[in-house]
Image (tube, rainbow, N blue to C red; front, top):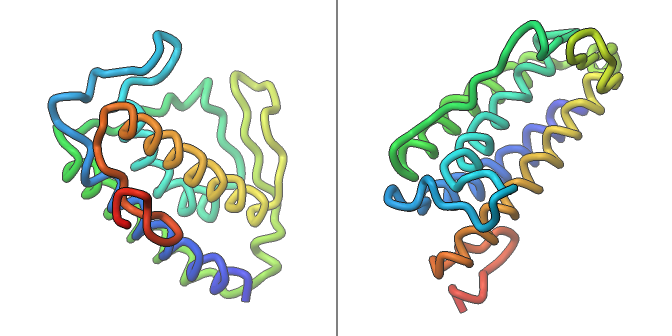
Length: 163
């Protein structure tokens, strides 16, 4: 039951992310609004990879990113980032669709960094955290694009650019 609810919401978020990623301009991937901010390309890659985290939360009980380095995917343009997100999304939706037992989603999921505990959630809580990360960073991408004067597609209805 929970997986079905997550799938429905995730499909909506995937569609919104796809629209946003597709308009990332190839000639601005190194642009960043502030020296402490990610570059546009790094942010787009991060958003694309988050689409795969849902599968990761289902398939893995514990991860230590200090021992297993994570490489953010790279692309040369918005279409490339959208395609990466699509592939990750398909894998995540498949894993979620095969999870029909709410009890499984209550199993423990742990994230560490060099042995130090970072997160200790149920799989369901980890998935919800991923959803929040996806929405947060996609909104951040919207700000980056707005600062570059690129019209923004609507997320939960039409944007000011679409009206």
